[in-house]
Image 1 (cartoon, rainbow, N blue to C red):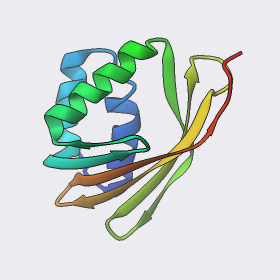
Image 2 (image 1 turned 90 degrees about the vertical axis):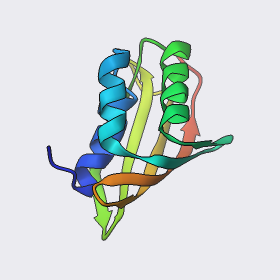
Image 3 (image 1 turned 180 degrees about the horizontal axis):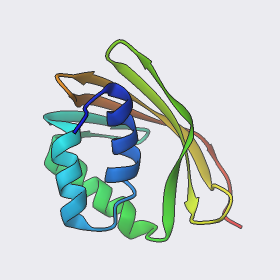
Image 4 (image 1 turned 120 degrees about the vertical axis):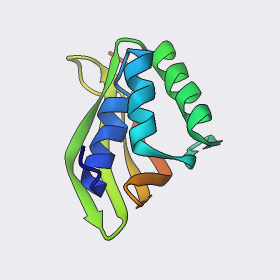
Length: 123
């Protein structure tokens, strides 16, 4: 499986945070992140694959019918990746938009920053 920065950015959004099956999500986490990954969210810092997996599960539980959608193509500059996203109920306008920026090394994400740019009231 390819581990380019662009592939890692898409896998982060779609194979990890959109994956409802815990076993498939766990496999994607193992392929996507360093064991000691650091994820910076707007309200917390998550350290390590296990904590990231717990947080991803928490997000899926809070909004089980919501999905992440890429907003534009992945941008890459050396070992940094950027991917905009939309988040909300499947088939509906997004409730939130934002971006993920990741520092990658040796074929995995070692540090991830999630920035939320807009939150709307759900319809």
